[in-house]
Length: 237
Length: 114
Image 1 (tube, rainbow over the protein chains, first blue to last red):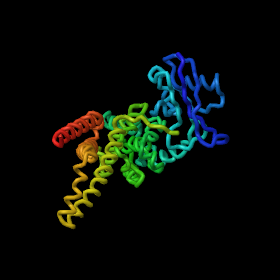
Image 2: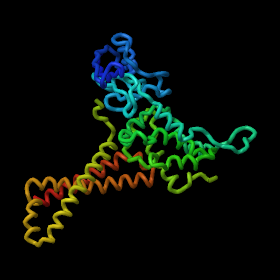
Image 3: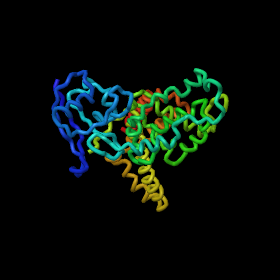
Image 4: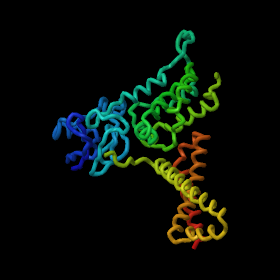
């Protein structure tokens, strides 16, 4: 089948502002959007810039605005989109070229929430044990692949790029509710900042956009409740 | 260049909530002005009431009814979600319910106005 693909192009060295380029591509309905972009790059315009790595929905490199919604290009099939595809870079970030955006501010926020286990107690002989229930408490938020689809789908982030954003809060949730972690109070304090967890307006675009089906809003509310009560609801606290 | 972002019902719920809130605020300002005019005596006040009875204003009153009821019910939806995070999975049916009730109340008020 032939599809019409509108791709937002922007080369900061040549273009004053982004513009749309239209390509007609012969594809299979079972092709993914990333396959279509590869085909354009290989057969029609080698200057098209697109970021991808694993191509299997794990690395989170190719989140794009596809037909008006944030999706992973490697997990979105052409047959689910119809004969016209519109592909644009993620919103709220500086465009480096075409579909590639500067994600440094995103990863700065990720690093700010201390995304690692903190525990300075003497290590036990084998491992820090955790019950299945304790592990289940933060299971949902372990699935995040840091693709930024949630953060860049959030109207609060569009209006205020300083907002920490759903992805950083999801990552914080993963460690706050880990029974082995000892820095959860510190992490909560970081999230109670003006640009932190209280800026969420329950728009649910993050939940709709997440390619890993994480209930992002639920995670944000759980962090808010932990801040309000000063407890993460685990027996040992 | 950016175009519209096609978020889910949650985005529409949020947008309507904002628009309804701004609409209610604008009406409130108008309402404060008309009540203030009462201090100039009943004649001035009564003369200006024609605004609310004009055919142009009636659809706006219906929209105001929808705005107030929707803002209240969607506010309750957000409160429910905020207190019970498990309810996040029901955010769509809750929104459909809030919107349906708002439309119903608006319809009843339109019938009452006619």
